[in-house]
Image 1 (tube, rainbow, N blue to C red):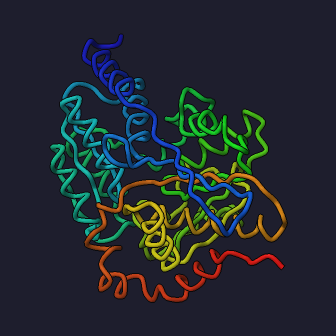
Image 2: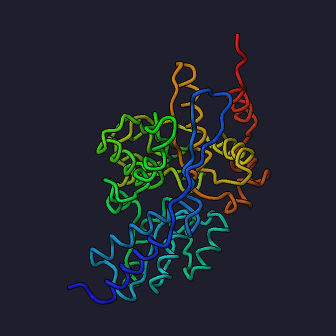
Image 3: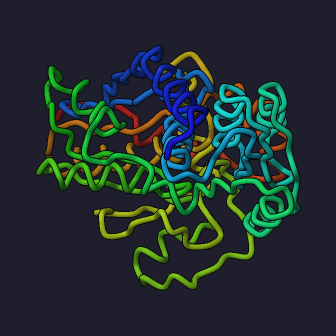
Length: 353
């Protein structure tokens, strides 16, 4: 029997959803690509500032409905930052203790936001350690390990109900090409790519899903080999995406194509996008943008027209002391110049004749 507290918690989360407007779909002018329209779904406008707000809401509703969270249950999550920020916000909404298990290198701003929302951070040395540490904490505290990497693809209703895919297609309805040729998404848990890919098939759209994967991530290798034992000894340097192991929520069969994106290309594209939008974005958005521009170039070369949609995952204000610090970038990412030059060449307008 559902307790009055659980009913109240679910009502609170649903009420918050009703108070939130949909996120914007931005069209980015690309003079070098005539007839090709590029859109960014701006997820930075959620109350907690990132795409992960959707995931956190779904995970809480899933866990509450399954009877895993009750009044006073401590919530523990393994995260590189943005999911933990959003879950801390929802935990505060429900009056629950929250602990984020995070790599010690996580952006300082994310740590501050988790603390601001009343959560606390438990640091480990590498991304590979977050899983076991989270399970141990949950066991010791009698809490619930949210486990976004397992439950992300299960917790979201991929058929519709205003999920991110449904929202994109509603917002595209009056555009020159209402059905995009491609949707481009990077994978952290794999939950969003699973939602997008399943929705495209369920609705019968011809849109192809490209998943872009950063260095040191095993998702692309897994997509090729289907070997779920793959491991990387080094974590991704692009916060929020790429994983050192195959996550249960990554569903390879709904992905049409994958592309490896060098870390320096992600940061170069991130910095270029700031010049187009007039505001900073995170590095995972740079990864998405690099992939979208490669597709635009392919379509141009093939004489095709159409639309490409990708995601603006979070604001760059969280990364002022990392991706926007030249010294940090030089030390941790490397030389951006070759990729900046490649972008400049790609975006150069072709003269007729």
